[in-house]
Image (cartoon, rainbow, N blue to C red):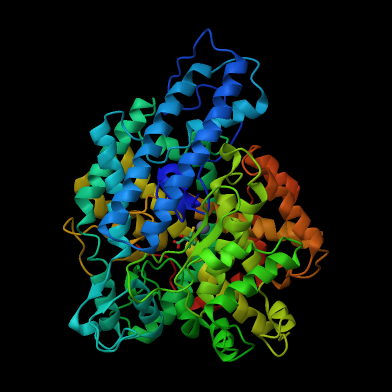
Length: 635
Ligand code: X8Z
Ligand code: ZN
């Protein structure tokens, strides 16, 4: 299964959530929650005559049948994503339709076991996981279900085929005579160019790809909500928020707590970045106390700002924080980058990737056909057919993404002997956070060890440069990670009507990220659709959670590895004790509530933002000095 597809019915980077996978089924787990969990919880009518033995048999059969359906749908999704055509779209949609039908039917059937006493704990947990497994629940009506499946496929394809076309972009792509640029080419342009108008054109034209998605997305929301109601939920958002071993109210409070804890970090980085951009673009374009124009942060969605490293470098030229430069200088190619990342996992005592991984993965963008380039990890058979699909470029960002994707693959690998309902992360944030944790160990010390750097610089200035490089990714991302699903939850619940889709999007982007659209964006646009996970229907809070957990994981693993000194200097490379702790957690899959899985690896049971705060402490102190003359914040 593709990771984002594993939530039945959502497109994923593990596989769509109607196949939701960016790494695995977003079937996440928790103990059977006390009923009623929240106002969104379905009122379950249990069957007086049902027995625990019947529940065991039901779950066993579901695991067998789901595995088969997931495999079929993952194969079709793989072929479609590697070769987007009218026919492959149809084939994928048909397989998903079957999966949607099965999933909704089994969730309904399982309601007869609700509240049943004497269930085996594993059975009770799998019933819980099943209940929240459908990220895109389909209505019973066959025509509506078919339409929902088609919409899922077509939305993802529209994104995959998207191009930004304009005479003003000529000369900025790989082919200098082309006027239409792929997202990969645009991404390079956004990191390299500092020409306000060229950047604006790239941003504008990419955001034009999503306009045809607007009516389709609206229709998809309506149909999926209908499916959710048939299952007894208020709307799809209650399902998305339901798989975290806590009530939806508790979940909201947890996410808000974590955000409140990390927001001061983001505010400082925002303040500093805005001041540096003001130097570059002038006061008129970057006024004080104003949000930053969204096209100037080196990334199409302003979600990570590593493209701005040169402007943000605290001590120019100190150390070698620019990993892209190192990779290019050492003549790395995509396969060599994947081997490097695999080498990190094996250094921890993990198994090498299977030969079929190398034979079946997509590593580079084919020239002759349309593919979905957004990176994803797969286990097509849920029993070891591991792959990644990525259009790798030789740069730092893609090296981090490769670690990210292999994190999914290693999770798949270590839990693939479990029944498929347990084949998921402890929660979906765990699945997203594994590779990211390892990427934190790609320190100058590690780079020196493997020969990418001649020697690790050891002075404070070089260290601050490295921390800035990290922060432009890890801290800049946090508000974006939080806001995407806030937008979607309100869309699903009807709080945001279709007539306010874009307005609500920009309100949230302003509130959380402190960025603003560079030009007026009315409801004649559909800007959310220009981000993969919206047409792909991949839930996003998982990345917010992962970006906090990865530091908590790292702190614990570094403790196990006996690291002394500041957290940001720790690399667990080569430490098999730390590796064993990680493997112990991976092997649990979703079989236990996430606090138990967290405990297995870290000895802690609560998500904790203090690790990320510790990690960046020296940078925060430095940013405070830099920001002294600035008026931070935005109106
Ligand atoms: O979608 C992804 C992965 C696949 S699960 C490439 N990520 C998010 C994004 O690109 O927006 C990883 C970081 C956040
Ligand atoms: Zn992922």
